[in-house]
Length: 127
Image (tube, rainbow, N blue to C red):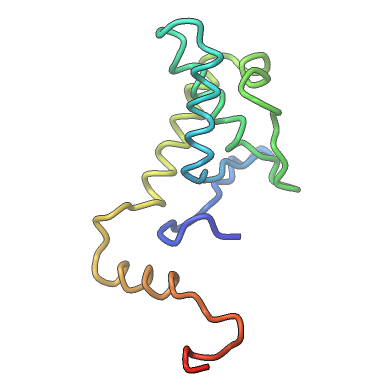
């Protein structure tokens, strides 16, 4: 299942049996909300939000299952530096592969092609 009509690649292989995958807008919002709940003060918010993001984005390459159950598990299983480094890689990957609204003309045409829905009955609208 494709998450984005605009995305180039949706997964980044980390080369160690793990992948980072692009997240839907809903997943990003959920990670932010979970991060806010985990953080006891504003100084903890970035670390907690990044941990919650990684809980959703970090998967095993072999079967694409999550490595961690939630943000709290990420905080317990990784160092702050590892969380920051992987969250930074995810952010760079997202920016590189989800170009946003400033698409060149050929990119826009590809989005248009990807966004067309085919009627379930196979009729081109005349039925």
